[in-house]
Image (tube, rainbow, N blue to C red; front, side, top):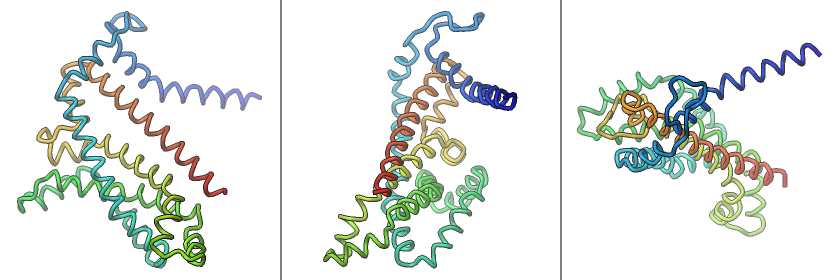
Length: 261
């Protein structure tokens, strides 16, 4: 009984430790003043309204969506088909993908940024394209794992063989049978990749900086000028990540349901 009480107390402490900064930041995003009291002296939507009236924030938000979404789309168009072919038809080469996934984690953002600058700055290549390429590679673990799990959940090889035995061509079996069965997992992996890239700061800040201001760079600037605006940016980011997390949960649950049927 004492062990159970201690475990419950530790769990409550852990939840408070993790969520208290988030709650405090959210409250500060809506606080009129919060200097001498435990709770805000008042609540207002002024800071959120100011934020969404700032064209710099809207442009930074658009750049973040464009850069993160572009990297995910490129990965879906080029990396996912390659993973499909290797897993379904050349499984003995899958170890090379797994090796590439491990190598992604071997390069910290600072080292990668220095390497990109030294490699591409002398060739006249716009550095934003170098960052885009690095983003595509950096989400390889999420894209690979999502694709692999989706294919394994539906027994993709057997599903394709069954469709071809029933008279479907390889293209029809892929587009009309396999793809509808695995798309929830693929979409969940894409959303997870997008959320990771949307919050990335080190690489874009070191390689490009304010020349391509994203939400994270905008946030860093506002931290030294207005705590309320900075908290509002964090609140918007948390809401966006919460929505993406909910969608990923629904899609993951749906993909498990498809696998069970």
